[in-house]
Image (cartoon, rainbow, N blue to C red; front, side):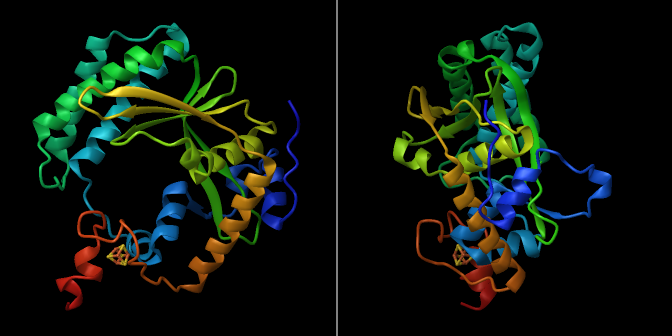
Length: 284
Ligand code: SF4
């Protein structure tokens, strides 16, 4: 595979140099910028301010807990498969999902949305586990599972870029596990920043181009079904992302976190800071 030239901006040079990382103890401590943070800032800077500047967390919905526990269940299987080369039985995986889901509900504050019921989410969760186990897991050959990566972005830049690959297969393909209520679209995947971050992380930390990027999705219909979509990224996409990160870094440093009420995300259902920003806690 080829060495990756990422070199049109200062950030790009820094990312390219990440192939020969400086030991962590010799690097100054930096804040980390993840896809989740970047995405939140782009959606609504004020939401970012509440969450990441003021540290205000909002409890997850039932669906978010279901999705997280499903991720843990897939991870549970893939981690042992690195060595065994075999999937766990479906029954064992569903038992794991149920016990983790029950433990999460018993120990965490969960903000159930209207219509969400714990039992229904649990049943749907076991069906999602089954759909993934049948249609996706058998062909997967895991090399790395839930692997963290960090990309240095230059001495003067206040953030490192941080991410986690859900799965890297033995041939180097990076795959992401998702559960959706609607069928994911190819055109959305092709411009999804999370996948560009996966590609950039791979190229910067491993010095080679990933052979493939894939989304392993389960669509949460009455009978959940599996969808696999493939996408590609070029060095041009990675440079574009680095330019965006540079701009966002400057915007955060400026301390101006304006609200963005335009879009689906700005509603009592989808923004956990609604009361604080738009509602009675703000005198409205
Ligand atoms: S209520 Fe709307 S504008 Fe305010 S933080 Fe939430 S998404 Fe942003």
